[in-house]
Length: 185
Image (tube, rainbow, N blue to C red):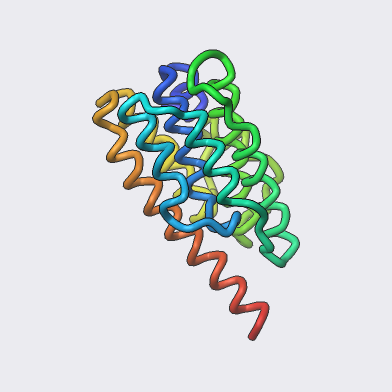
């Protein structure tokens, strides 16, 4: 099943977790630490106060200074994900946000992967994955995995979704760090 189809079939919790996972993987571009979005994950697990946790995350992430043009654009996309997060993880707004986060996160990975010369990620989300560069392919797999975990396991799938997101965040942090070292050296 394509990513677009999985998003279309996801329930509100799955959509909120999918959007949050995309944002979580992109936190290195915003200068955030690994725990900054943890309260939002917790609010999904125990029906906590999403809106309050979201405001705290926005305040904690402030502004980042990534440096290079591709990372500037990538950081802008990540910031937009955070700013667009709905105050409630219910209703039509969460579906729109999750879909936008999916596109933005794939676009971020495309910008940071010098091997990708395509201009659109739409065909990737619909299942056309031939000649996909490794960074984008891995992000697409993570997005699909998160949605499958949540559709197959409900709230119990949140732990696995967080683990998938943590792995992706570490990879993106390494990519950003390696690019920064390359600019300095």
